[in-house]
Image 1 (cartoon, helix red, strand yellow):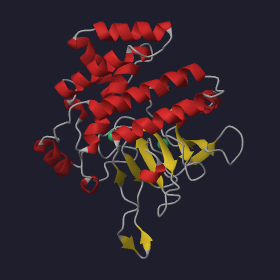
Image 2: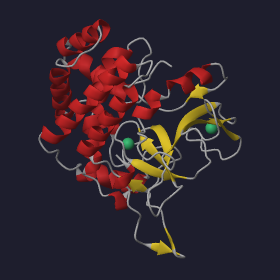
Image 3: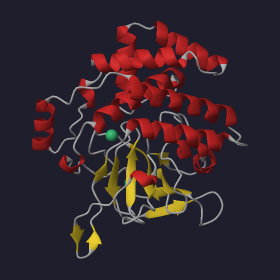
Image 4: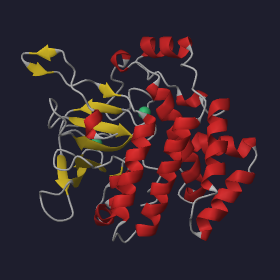
Length: 304
Ligand SMILES: [Zn+2]
Ligand SMILES: [Zn+2]
């Protein structure tokens, strides 16, 4: 989603617009913008081939989001359970054997076969294409749990791309105004972890921070200085490659020893919560030497 899509809540409190809790994704626009951003970042980048592949994959996600049959709204009992229990309305644990998600995965696997990719990627794709229902549900279960085994990243990448399409389309059926906060660093739509957070430059909510779900791409409001892993507002510090004016920084928490990237869209509106996470892998290299764990979820850079 571009920053243009963020519109302030018209309700005013003391003359200042109250930042909305959440912005739901517009899947087609989201993946189209992400594809453009990956393609832009690829130019002259050390990871140009990979970023170009991810641009193509994002383009495929946009095409699927535009052409797959419309999803049925969430079952009313999921919504009721969420409202009662302070849970997100999308219950990921119920999606492992969802026929619509299985169909989305199948469509993505067919479309991905047309993409250019290195031999290892091709082999992983072929393995998933030939896998049976049980194996696919194991892969889907890992992705839906935001827990991708480090020794099987390539097959999960394709499955995660399908899950992103499905979750973002499901999230788009929700009512943003009906969402309630779940916990610090937890997506109020699907319960997922953030890929990154962004300090927005959108008019009316300048300098407000939104975390971006690595699964459904819903963006939700978080205070500016807070650990998105444990919720601590103490012991937070920032690191970046280069200057203080960097548009991507690592937010470190000394309480739980984890870190998540924070993007300054207020300085560059075209930053994408997922693409710029991959594009700023130099920051991950810097953090590799630190005694902190990467606390975010982005299936395109698992293993760093
Ligand atoms: Zn989510
Ligand atoms: Zn923490």
